[in-house]
Image (cartoon, rainbow, N blue to C red; front, side, top):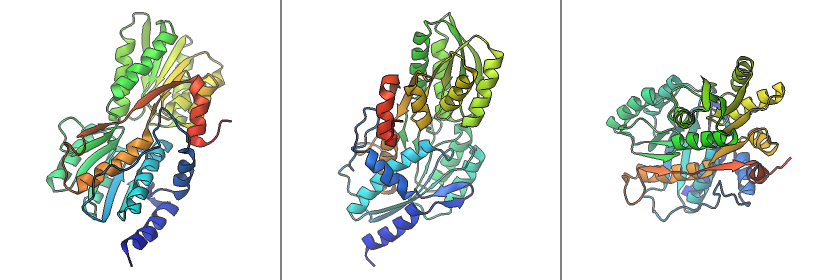
Length: 358
């Protein structure tokens, strides 16, 4: 059986089925890939769907990757859409890329550690990880590299500085994203008011960095005050509960900075239910968050180009698998963009990403 036929059979089994493995998924649902392709016909300044493989010629005709991330969530589904398009383009060139794309239902550094230790025993050309907690995971990545494995990081959270991982693809400016969102909030409030910060997962570099950026920015203004910093574990439900509590505790709360994709939705639900006038700024492209943005309940969102993160993760992994080190072929840390969008851009973003505007 030829390489292309084997690839088609294997890819079909990966992409059509969603297999339960320790509370996570293997592969990537094909209907999402088809759905994303239809949306990609529309252009967006925040997300670049018009991606093509670079001119690097892979050394093999088959690659097998292990990729693990923080938590099952639609944010990482968007990353996977870019991965799938890169995989399809490689397949058109006769190169098969298979991968396991795994995460727990609840963010857990210990769970991620165990997945990596299991992957160490598998037949993988590259092990990639979106770091759940840099203090816990970075030493594991060093051990994997020392044992001869090719390791990279991707998505929104890199390992700790000095980690031996080979390369990182994703957001390199989380601190700046948090600062930019907080600056927009402060300006909207006239640089006066009490603010809460919903962080996300404790220890997750991207969430912690955004929170630090927000806190440092707010601290510049005498009229601004951070009254609460809480962790919602990237859960809409918990974010709503925490916001309910904060609203009861602070009758004069003026704003909320949300540092992940889930908490803007939870915060907006709580604000809507309480019928309070509170300015919300947050991260990313959750469908409900975009609807709240369109309706003026959320003030602005920082949208990351998840599609490009996924696409470039696969391209970089191929080079890493081939033994190519960072340099002329690819950077050691590949920066992907974040775009701050406001109410007047929400409807277009809904149409671009989800094919809906209602």
